[in-house]
Structures are given as C-alpha cells and as structure tokens.
Length: 493
Ligand code: AMP
Ligand code: MG
Image (cartoon, rainbow, N blue to C red; front, side, top):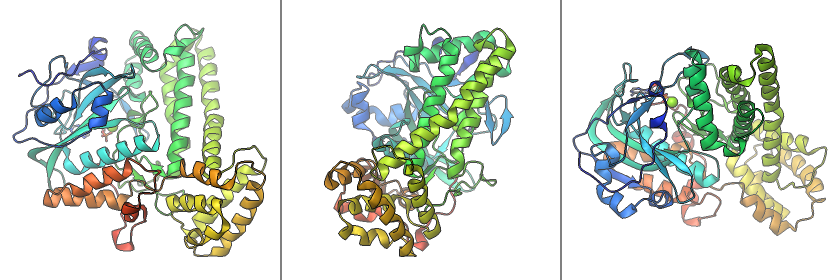
C-alpha cells in the first residue's frame, strides 16, 4: 500500500513471542471520512498533525497502512462477568504499532473497528459510529479530568453500514494507550501453563510501565504490588468524579493503570451508590460502589497468573500473593479518602473526616442530589455561606444539607487556608463539566441521524476544560430533564 504521512513506529510488542499476537491487516472500507483528528495529542506524540489531517481518512480507516506499522491483534483471555473465557483477543481492534512521544513514553496506536482479526470469532470486527463517538468523548474527558486513561487520536466514519439490532453507520476510533496489555493478557498465558511466556510478558510490562522495579529483589512481586497500587488509585479517582466503567471484566483492566475499553460507561447524575447503567449488567456486578471490590477481585486474578513467578515454593507464592492482595483495601481507602477530602476542602488530618465525607454522601443519596453539581456548588459555599442557596436547592429536604453544612463549617474552621483559596482549590478538583449521558446521547443522535457533528464538537470543546466555569456552556453543566434522562447504556459490540 502507498506510503502515507510518517508515523515513526518503534514496535516492541510485535517482537514478543509469536503466540502473543496474530497478524491482522485492516479491511479497507468504501468511503472513509475523517470526523476528527486530535491535533494536540498528535503533536504530543511527535506526529505531523497537518499531514495526518490530509491523509487521516485513509490512515485512520485502515485503508492505508503507514510505513513501519506491523498490524496485529493481541491475544488475551478474560473473566467476563465472572466467567472465564480462555480465548478472547482483539476481535475488532488492530494494533498498528508503537510510537515514542515527546515525553519519551512509548504508546500503542490502535484502530478499533477496522475489520476482522484471527480473534474475531463470530464478530464482524466493526464498530458502530455511536460507540466510537462515545469512546472519543469520554476518554478525552477523562484525560482532561486528570484521570489515567487511553486516549482518542482520531475518529472516522467508514461509509459502510454495520448490522446490530438495527443498521447503523460504521466508524473507527484510533486509540492511544500506554499499552493494551490487560489482566486478561496474563491470563491467556497462565491458562496455557506457559510460565516462560508469563515471564517474558512480565518483563515487558516492567520495562514499559514500571522501569523503577528493574533490579528489585523480587521483581514480579513488586510488579503485582505496583499494578495493585495503580488500580486502587484509578478506581478511587473514578469514584471521585462519579464514573461507572460498566464492564470491568479482567480483559478490560489494563495493567498500566489506565482506564480502558469505554463501552457502556456512564457518569452519575443523581448520587446513588447502587447505580448501574449498562444493559448487560443485570446483577449490578459493576455498580458504582461495587467497583472498588471488583478492582480487588481483578487483581486477585492477576495475582493467580503470577504465582509461578513469585516463588519456587507454591505455598510461599500463595502467601506473597495474598499479602499483596490484602494491601489493596487500604491503598484504595487512602486514595479515596484523600480525594474526597480534597473535594470538600479538608487538608489536615482529623478523626471525624471519614464520617463527614460519609455524611455528605448519605444526604446526597437520600435527596437524590446531583453528584457533580453538589460538589461544584459546595465550592461556592466554601467562599461564603451567602452562596449556600444554589447548593441547598439540590436537596429536596434542605434541612439535611443544613445540618451537614454546620458540621462542615465547624471542621473547615480549623483549616488554615483563606476561604477564597480553599474555594479555588476545591474548584480545581470538582469539575463543573462531566460528559453527561444525555449530552453524549444527543451528540450521537445528531451524528447518526443527520450527519451533524456539531454537538460532538461542542461537547469535546467544553469537556477539554472541565474545571473552568465557561458560562457560554452553562447548559452543559446541568443534569438531564426527566425526558432527557438516559436509563440504559449499551456496549454496541
Ligand atoms: P468488549 O466488550 O469490547 O470488551 O469486547 C469483548 C470481546 O469481544 C473482545 O475480545 C472483543 O475483541 C470482542 N468483540 C467485541 N465486538 C466485536 C466485533 N464487532 N467483532 C469481533 N469481535 C468483537
Ligand atoms: Mg474489551
């Protein structure tokens, strides 16, 4: 195929043993059109954004394979809703290769929706436009919120239909990730009893994501602990912004600690710890407040795969793994409490802090208060009690929040920062704007039904600065009207 805009590929995964992956060329499409190139990301990766803009439709649809790309699907297994599936793999994603960004970090460039691979099973290897736009919006919003995440480099429409419950326009998203190595990638090798392969993969992950662990006395135990730490941190960060991943299967859990595989994900509007949006999560396994425990469960699955590397004595290996897993709870709790304390402007350590945080969440739950607006309006209340009005309006029973505000002011009275500075610090961790489900839905509807991408563009613009006030976009900060509310989200696979 023709040589296109240069992407300076430097591939390492393709060099790993042959059974880790399978060659997979994208299947060309008839009429690709570039919806969006993420220029700032392209530049951060050291790519020529102008050239990519010109050639984007061809490259990001998979019609042209840039020089240096070695397209492949990665093999992995996974526990899906608790059931082990020995072979999944990239069924609709094709890794073009890796680039080293201006920051010196190696990242994958992957096309999702570019056609069948040897792992497609009965799937068509395609993605519908809706899920492409959803992943683009939400992954970039997560980045702007400061949460570890894969990113979106480009989105295209293919000009071809995909067949789901109904006929939908097809799309391809180009995803950038620290890597696409998952807990399920380790499970793939463990399930085959391939201890040598596990060691190769673990060394690759250490090199790539945890180089500081090289030369540790027990590098694979250190790796397990480091992945656990990043996972505990990540899930704490999700909870602090009201994010529900929706499908935290072990194949959707990246060992880099990035959020990956944005399927039926959604953000809370009204606070409800038991909230589930995903149509396929009937038991609520991946409900908002179940995520910390599921993170631990997924880490236990990772630990199992590493047992043969932890110690030659199997019972000692189990002990080491158990200790590492046992550490997850405290790691999560510390990150979560630190995050929640910042959200309410607490910086010193006091015994009652956890209760104070829980007290606010309980009042929010009882009153179905909007998660994002509550914390954002609390920033104004931190500046002066004269600003309490808009916050109180979120609580059907205002006495509930009044009682809490009294206790909060008593506690924050012992903090040292001046009120205006506290408010500013709180605004830097409590977003005004999150990708609200109804706004995503409206953007997808306009794109799918009318070929109108203006809402998609506007949403990306406003979400790029989630902590800024942006009065022109005030409507994007508010919860859905009852008629706009999204009750269910779908994988779109
Ligand atoms: P996901 O729900 O995106 O995490 O995907 C779970 C598994 O199903 C992965 O192995 C995917 O590659 C595969 N898969 C999902 N959708 C498709 C599709 N349209 N064609 C082929 N494989 C798919
Ligand atoms: Mg997946």
